[in-house]
Each structure stands twice: as C-alpha cells, then as structure tokens.
Image (tube, rainbow, N blue to C red):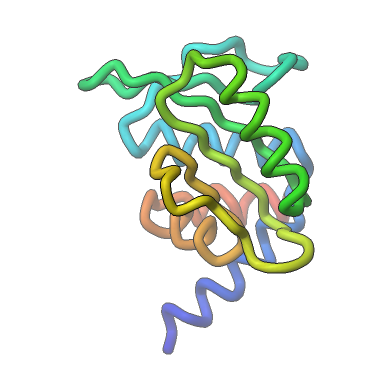
Length: 138
C-alpha cells in the first residue's frame, strides 16, 4: 500500500518538472540503467532528444521525451525513427499521456513507451525519487 502511494505521488511530481529537468531526469534514468548518452547535451536535435548506446552490446537507441503526448505523436515519431533506420530501439517517454491507452503493434518489440505510472516505477527503481523531489521543491 505504501509503494502504491509513493507511485501516485511520483506520478504527480513528474508533472511539476519543467521540460529541461524532465529531459535530464530521463537521461539519468537511462544512465542508471546501463545506457550512455552519445548525443550532445541540450539544444534542439532534429529527430530525437537523446541518442543512447548500451555499453555492453553497443546497441543504439533513440529517445523522444515529451511532457504531453498522444498516439498520433507516438506514431509520427515511430515512423520518423523507422525512416532514419539507424537505431535498434526506440524509447518514447512522456509523463502525461493524452487520450486512449498506448497502442504498440505486437510485432514491434523494439518500441518502448514509458508514461505516468511506468515512468514513476522507473524513477523508484533507479533511486531518483530524491532528485525528483528536490527539483520540484526548489
């Protein structure tokens, strides 16, 4: 029961981050999960927000970070990532999903979507809750 309450609070806290802090948090989650950022820090990139490499497998992944998104946005970014044909995996991260539940085609195991509760679980699993709460109260 306490974990569920912590997840609820974390979901709400994510929505209070400004976009720069939210992108930094996502970068930290991936870094603590064994991924290294290989793209430039900050600034506008044409297609993605983060380009990552898994240190052991050297697998490349694209990450798109959005505060709010819907299925149309996910489908558009997926199409563009597919056209780029340079990433093995695509991560779409947003704290406030709009509309019907996320739909990922069953044959696409390389697309990973983290929203709301799934994202809050990642924050807790990687030990970033203190970082998150410090950002929103400062």
